[in-house]
Length: 300
Length: 264
Ligand SMILES: [Fe+2]
Picture 1 (spheres, helix red, strand yellow):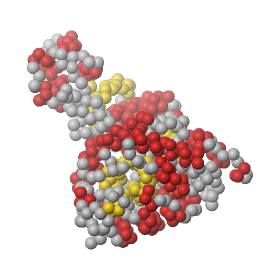
Picture 2 (cartoon, protein in one colour; picture 1 turned 90 degrees about the vertical axis):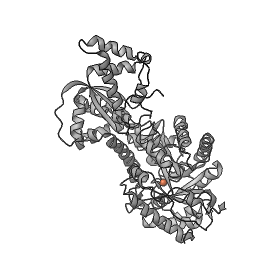
Picture 3 (cartoon, protein in one colour; picture 1 turned 60 degrees about the vertical axis):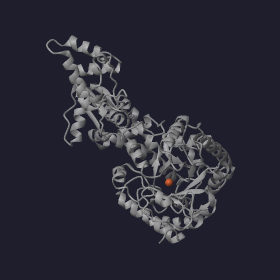
Picture 4 (cartoon, protein in one colour; picture 1 turned 90 degrees about the horizontal axis):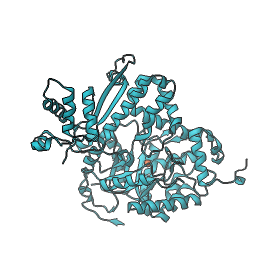
């Protein structure tokens, strides 16, 4: 899976780095950002040095207008990945066919590098909480999710990525750790993993487990993307708020994740209290520097 | 309480009790949560409940900024919590969550006692509909000039998908405009008024008021009636004007607004 791609970074829009001599994993897109409304015009006008953008699928499940216009203009300039929040893969409701259809239409329009959603459920009995609610980590839930991921992958005609969520509760129904569960889901369904480094940190603090154990429990060849984000630390617990800069312990964990999984497509998720684009690019450069220092990649 | 002896919930019943907590505050779910460290299960669960309510509130806030100014913070909060109870989300995109807000405001006191409140909400929803409606090519003057005289009478116009025709019973749009300019709105006055909303070629949402005559013409077009029918209607209303000039004036203004859809 390690392939030498000498020209890849030059082919990708916005990437200003010159030829890289290290071996890059085939799936490596570089360092990306979440595409946010506040930055649409600036991205088009200035074509900032961001390797790719992640878009929230549901935000573009509209018929037309300005958001879609910007989306397509930006897609012409950058690689994209699609990130959903409403698949509700763990729900006991039937899979939402109308939603899957909208997702597929958008996939056809955007031709993203990949499609991801969360290892969670968002609602039941046709009511959507619009939150990423944790699963009980047991065999019933495992069978249920594996079956549904297979359906979704068949429908979309491609493997998807499942992301670990931040959580604040553990159910008495759980029989295994979250990482055992996630890993088993990936192994049995053939999906890949989007590891949210901040979510691992947040959940580790809230449930008092070792974040390093989490990383060690995930198969090396199953991970395709990292998320980084900010949180709010209340002392006794931590909430995944996406409204701050990435915190120092998350940077430390990011380094540990790079050591285990190697160079990985990495992006920063900022959903609230959104700073100027330049600030996010500066933060992304921290991620890039950590990757360069940790893996000795791409430094000239 | 000994957890090991407890019967374990199926996934379905666990999800049912969690939703009952989020939507109705029922606390049966607490029995299914492992006690961990210093943080109580109540605190842990409330993180979810707060997030649920805050997320929906933010959606209403974003969709209805002027309604928020009209109501003031206290009434706005009362409306939000009432709507969250009244209308649990059944959509996958939050874009549609507040679609039933105007209806809720006609039913729920004290809002229902002031019908202008529901109308302001309805106006803001129509702005959203115009904002992200389907794209379509617009009819241009060039296209119109290419028509042969024989094409004219059976010509049936179509509107751009963003076009919304609406009428209100109160001065809701004027109040919306006043608040948008950060000035105090006039008191609510009952006055039937008609409005057209659309997204212009620069993708900006626009609106303007309509007189009775234009409303009828637009309705006729929406009903699929052709140019000759429009002229006939104008002819029956007018005594001293050239009907074809009058009709062309309307068409030209619609072309300028960019509200007609291209035939090509
Ligand atoms: Fe994430």
